[in-house]
Amino acid sequence: MVDGKLKVPENKKDAQWFSISKAIEMMSLPDTKAPLVIRDMTKQLLYYPEIIWGGTFLLSKNEGKITYKTTEEFYPLK
Image 1: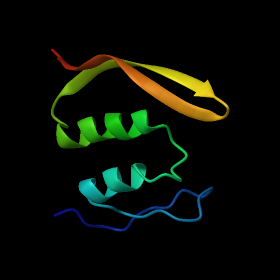
Image 2: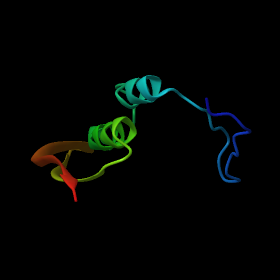
Image 3: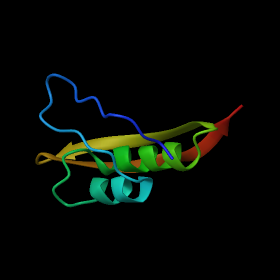
Image 4: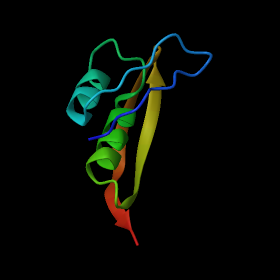
């Protein structure tokens, strides 16, 4: 179990702790401003923190919406 007091950066109004599954769920919500690729990278890092990962994505912006395509799947770096 992890505990302690959460430190909110001075320039932020709020910060919260979430479980991995809840954090991934929240990054998938329609009103999330971050590109979904951030969710996928975070998911990989949180589920497999002992591995350093490589992979590539092509990001595009069309009419203000960011989309991405995986051009190289995640792979472990040795």
